[in-house]
Image 1 (cartoon, one colour):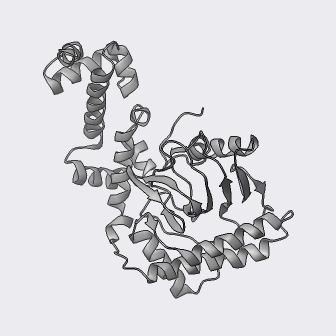
Image 2 (cartoon, helix red, strand yellow):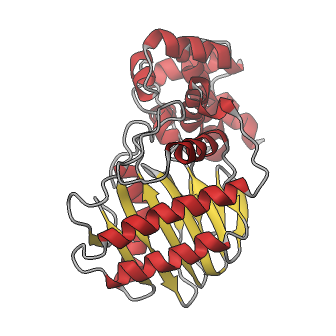
Image 3 (cartoon, helix red, strand yellow):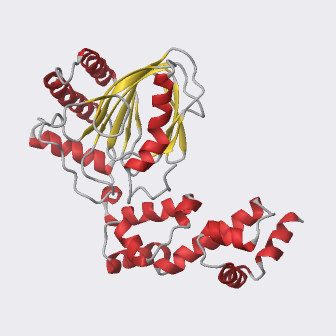
Amino acid sequence: MPRRIPIYTTQDETCQADSCQPVLEAARTGEIRLETLVHGHYPGRALPRNALPGLKTVGYWDAEQAQNWGLGWHQNEGIELTLLERGGLDFAVEGVERRLRPNDLTVTRPWQRHRLGSPHIEPGRLHWIILDLGVRRPHQTWRWPSWIMLSKPDLDELTLILRHNEQPVWHNATQVCECFVRIAQAIEADQDGSNVSWLTVLLNELLLHTLELFRSREVTLDESLSDTQRTVELFLADLRSDRGHLAEEWTVRRMAQACGLGVTRFTDYCRRLTNTTPIQHLNRMRLESAAQLLREEEALTNTQVAAQCGFSSAQYFATVFRRQFGRTPQQYGEEMEA
């Protein structure tokens, strides 16, 4: 497996490792029917090189029986719309579990971690589209492909809602479902790009139906969801949630680059959010992670804990740990055992 890197630095590796392989294997063994048209690493039939740029994958799976696999926590390099046509499915986004019913639409942005199955996929038919709009962080400008034909006011409104509202599940998306079914038919009939024109029309219709769905509901907009502070918040949360990410050889410059910011601006936002410098906050998170590891794995040595949590040496780790907790790592571990 490739080394895990935060979503802001590398996307394709994360998506390929976390979400594509189980689907590909299930299709290969005949556990599901998989019909997709794709660009890049996603499983499915390749679209012509210049057809529908920005479209990463569009298609569906049809699982007639319960599966022994699921899609673990992952992120995508584009905005993803999924629609459950039939069956039931457990869905989680950013740690919140939800139960999908037929005609439920989900919307996830590139920075949102989500999961399908808990842990396995149930019988059902699921449609999706992943569209790369050139964004990896909340504060970046969205760039729609040139084949999107919505009027500027409509597209601006759709973008505004998608940027400033992160409601993940929309119920009773009947028209969106009907459009996905027609898209599926176009995919099934496609031969080496023969239905690209139909797909262009239908994908635009899909976005328009999605906009109409939003217009029919009470949508709460929050501008803070697309500001730079939100990007830094998500980056710090990403570090905290994954010990492998936390153990990377981070510098202030590299952290700032991961957020698409200059060092000074990143440091200012970090101080605003944590009341400490980036390195002080990084060390605090590493110490908290080390303390958790000592509670969970009492047999680990200082060297092992230091390596897993990103400290440069066991001696330095022991020194800063005692400074923070008032006891050595060994004493801390022994107290947890008592």
